[in-house]
Length: 310
Length: 280
Image 1 (cartoon, helix red, strand yellow):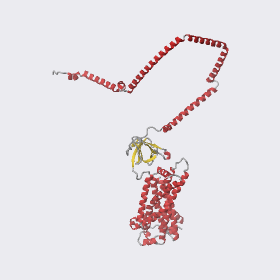
Image 2 (cartoon, chains in turn cyan, purple):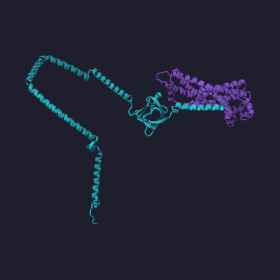
Image 3 (cartoon, rainbow over the protein chains, first blue to last red):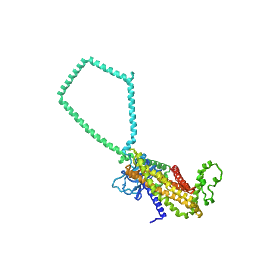
Image 4 (cartoon, each protein chain N blue to C red):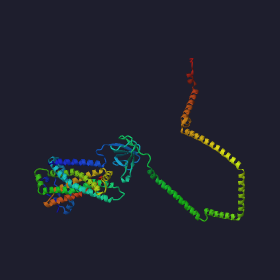
């Protein structure tokens, strides 16, 4: 069967237009037939995120970024994401920008919430994790740590160097004190040498004294025993007293804490300025009332008058 | 010495402002004439194309002609364009993979280089070159033969507007059908790129697509589209101009055919650079 030229041309053009449209949508990463829904997320920093970048949940692609906008009011980056219907994103999920933009791998990463939570409704805004990951924190603080370590090492170095310099200088105090120390040692040696006999006698005396002491304790061991037992008892009592004192102080402590926190009547009294303020204003009002009364007593007395004569 | 001075002026054209009378009558040195030849050719070309589009109101008479040309220029060219695109896509993938063979570059980058290259440049320029040979030479030979065998004169004698009848359908067919061929070229080129990566073991199809999607911009196919329209106009209009003003006999037809193909290629490259500089 022969087709007319018009038919061939028309079919070719329509095919090309459809193919171009489908191809462009395909490369723009928009699901063609699968229905999708929209979720939002707000970030402090987009980190190079642009539309068309993938949205991943646990590393699996579940959609793509539709639009990235800077909110002038809140100074945050609002990201609109198109997600496929299939995977469930439970409530309590958190979104973050992950990847390195230099390699083009930046994407939105969704950490899913508890499995049993209901699915997020279309148009909902995902939360963002509060604290950066421990690795991120470490990376943040690493430069500071490194510089601190560096300065410590440098100080140590400087100290060692100055110590070295001091030691090397012949007239330095350190050197002199070392020399004096050596002199003292020599003197001590001479003295011990000279007084050897005296020292020996001293030691002998000391020995006899300790022997006497031993005899004495042997004779009076009973009374010493009693004395020690008494001492023990009184120490025990003291200990108990201290324990109860400790309890008391703990109770006082809790009371003080309560006062401080403002719980309980006394605490409220102490912490809540309301009462003071009210008292103050009451006093001030009473003052004005009294002044007014002084100025024009009749105004008040009039009401008090029980019987009006005229 | 120059082909244009021998150009036969058809009776129908002689009534309208004469195209080549001034330099035939003026007594100017031959050097100056040859220096001015490009400008004269450009003017002649512009007037011819202007007349072709001016006769658009008679177009209803030549309606059938347009579809014949569309089939010959567009649909009949699909196989050769697809073949060229397939090879360029395959070669581009293999060579990009070879050049990026370092562990630090993710394989997806191959996809993000190959796909935009085909959309922006290779798909449309390769198709343009193929068509400069296939379509440009064909049009120039056709019209040139009609000129030297005095068929164009016969059309004029019959009262037909030969420019509207012969040139306008060809140029319009080129402008409309080149973008269609560009789409074919892109799809086949990227498709064979993916296939080559998968079969040759360079990267998987999903890696290729991930890379291609990562850096996809709507501007890429848009610029390719603009280029394809421009190239369609360049190839067909230059071929029509060269064929319509063929002089001499069989040798003149051969000259016009060669010049049509060569000039089309040159101006495709010039237009390619201009579009890239203006729009990128």
